Length: 152
Ligand SMILES: [Zn+2]
Image 1 (cartoon, protein in one colour):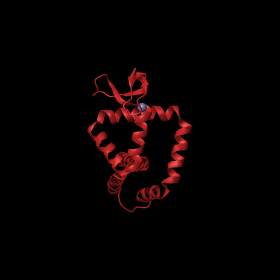
Image 2 (cartoon, protein in one colour):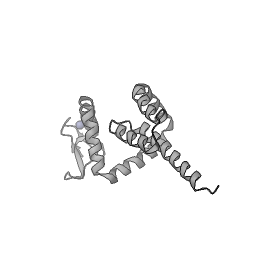
Image 3 (cartoon, rainbow, N blue to C red):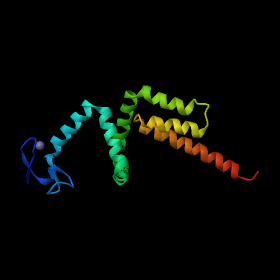
Image 4 (cartoon, rainbow, N blue to C red):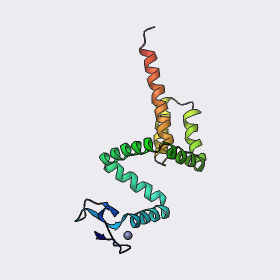
């Protein structure tokens, strides 16, 4: 049992997130309070929040890898919810989505140039779309290689 420093309620340990640098291994605020705090800081300054998150992930490649793995597991277990979230995201970000798609589909530049352009786009947080386009570009590149190496 532990008291939350925000709502002052005494809760079980599993109501707190694990924090390695705290004495007992758990955070100072309970999960609901922490989530509220996170959400409010995210809403106040979304750009700053994303920047910090990117910085943190760059410094913690192992954690980033773990995140990706657990994301994939979550997606596999919640396919319908994920599809719904993605659909909503698409509606909300249609304009941005189209901009990225334009680079990929309607560019006369070669694969490497388009790739570089997409990498720049990634800085603005179009992760899903950029990843998709990069995968397609890689495929295009590999297909080209295969064709060249095949004896004629
Ligand atoms: Zn609390």
